[in-house]
Amino acid sequence: MIHFEPFTLSNGLKVIVHEEPTSQIAVMNVMYHVGSRDESSAKTGFAHLFEHLMFGGSCNIPSYDMPLQQVGGDNNAYTTTDITNYYCSLPAVNLETAFWLESDRMLGLAFDMKSLEVQRKVVIEEFKERYLNQPYGDVWHHLTDIAYTTHPYNWPTIGKKLEHIEAATLEDVKDFFYQFYRPNNAVLVVAGKIKRAEVEQLCKKWFEPIPAGNPYERLLPQEPKQLAPSVKTVEADVPMHMLYKAYHMPGKGMSGYYAAEVLCNVLSEGKSSLLHANLVEDQSLYTKINAYTTGSFDPGLLIISGSLAKDITFETAEEALLSVCSRLEKITDAELEKAKNQIEAQLVFSRVDLVNRAQDLAEATLLGDTDLLNQEIHYIRKVDLAAVKESAATILAENNSTTLKYKARSL
Image (cartoon, rainbow, N blue to C red; front, side):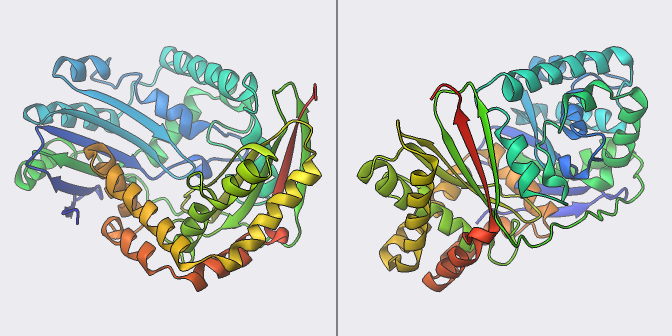
């Protein structure tokens, strides 16, 4: 059980305090409720670009990193389809430094062309290195483009096109900041060797004077139920053929989500999992095969990806994969218990890290219930064989699938 105390500032900033007296550090996590799903289809990649811009200096502090490093702290950030998250850890005695730095860049960035151009170049290089010039780097662009016809999960977090980032203007940046980077669109978690009274006092001093923004009403177009399979074939200079199968599944915390997580574990976790044992070890049709879920707030995807063994055709590989998936109706109590034990162990182990705890508290708060963090293992434990079999029959139906055949040009 992870203890926490919540309160809300007058400007709408939600604050979660997690006291951990055994630690000598403090963690500050600021999670903004904005991700790539909140972008316009004509201006994608902005949420990720902003992750970088937030390190470009604020109106009063030209460098975010240097003052933090001088007091023994470090920091990082990441962007997903649903959130943008900033976190730092530092000695607990220097906690106010984090309040000073985080509040100042929430108050206002130093909007200037120099910072925009520097960060734009960084993002463009990342786009080229990781998505355009890396083998299979464009897989997610292909998959989301065919799996989502309506919902803005249609493009990856990096953006749909390089041109959208290249065309970003200073006015675009200001509009995005003042729409989304407001205290009433964020959750602040402070964890570690701290006290609620201290955090409350520092919040009132550093964050409460920041004005709230206009409320953001998220009215996203929802993805219609998929009624027929989608298939796409691409060819490139890559080492081997890859097969990807994407299936629509419930979003995080929605009904059926935890059954889908258990299903995914049964399929892919460890060498004794169904996919690896049958397709890699027994039949040698794949050299490697994995399954994972996107864990998104809105209905997401369960992905199965595998690299084909030499001389194996896509038809043979896919037929064998579907055959293994059909065996899920015969899974045993022992296989179910093993999967649930593995998920529980992963959750418990990940939350030994104070940074992970802070991030999970923030995400659960944005999902509408901070205590979801403490209930997840309970929900996993409640999943029974009937739920997993129903999940398999519903999610892994071929009419619910998007298939990407990524061909190696030289084979």
